[in-house]
Image (cartoon, rainbow, N blue to C red; front, side):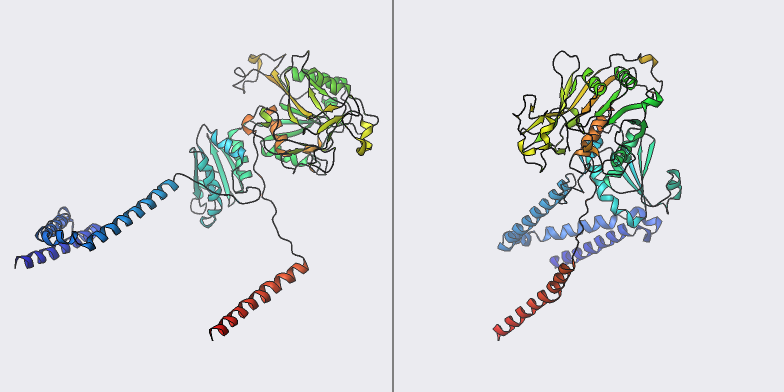
Length: 532
């Protein structure tokens, strides 16, 4: 009789627990006057179920001593262990992101430059994506990587149709616009590519625009030319790094502009005038920055003398030898097109630079180490099996080339690029500097010069070779004292299209429409016949 009463009480307890659950899930169904008593059914149900369990303690104890109970305990423990492993794996995965990029040019892996910029953030950066909700996913993969590299990066997705006020606030006019916001500065990007997003980040991090003047009037490379020998591609790359580009004809202006961050002399065919050389010499003495790329002579038998250019380089500890580097290491099919690196000589321009560079027809540029106060340092060298040929006439008979032919030849590895960095000898008074430059008193003007024995490596025809573009950009950034931009840049997606000829198209048709279905049919008939 007592057992039956406890059994009834257990069912009443279960009913009270169900009622308490319903009241918790649907509190609006309860009258306001009864709200304070909502927890009573729960506790009453717990008490009744416990009373029933106490009344059945003998049966419960006997069950746990049985074989089924032991098997159940083992099964329960196994389930708990598996659940624990799953919870631990999910916990670790939320804090550790590991992905494998199997694309040819690592299209989905952030470049060294992007990672370097993100790691160096000193304040929060916000990416606001303005697009339709069904288009957000094309930005998530890329921007999630940005957020993974730095805790200072945040991303917000905004539908301009639902939040027009916010879109108007940031002057967003088109779908797919990303606003990069940093310290109150905003930059708009209309692309989801890493190259464009990182360029937008560079512009908000470095709001000061640097102006690069390309010297003209001596047959130098033209930044507006899209020909093979033009510099239009490298000019576009400079603009993406927040540089302004302009031409400078010193013979006409007779002065170097005050806003010049640096001057590039790219492959002059004739020598500088005396007045131009004097202006450049004064510019360097006051803390100027110059990149001089001097090609080997066009006429190998009668090389054109350029005493002003070579004399300017010599003043700063660089010797522009009258030579052509020959490389017989076998890395290229043409001996006069040497390949450099890696490894490169230790220098900030080539720090952790692991890409090869190619220089079509380059002369040796060597640092002067004796009787000079200029700390010139080589930052590009050719391979061991190379030399600088000083007997230029012998280049017309490549089979007879040998490093022992002339005593004046320079044995490899040959230095083809030299950099100089030192405090400006005639630095202007810091108090007279522009009031807009708040760091003028903190930074002492520094003269920087880089001399490379070839200008064609940065031309349109050769800019796509491995590290040529990054080497030129790193050199410009080092000259402008923008060391945070010295790194490997984002690569553009390569063209991986498959072009089918008529014959290949016919072969694909017969293979997919005829051969494979026929093989499946024959296999099925054979299997059916065997079973019969």
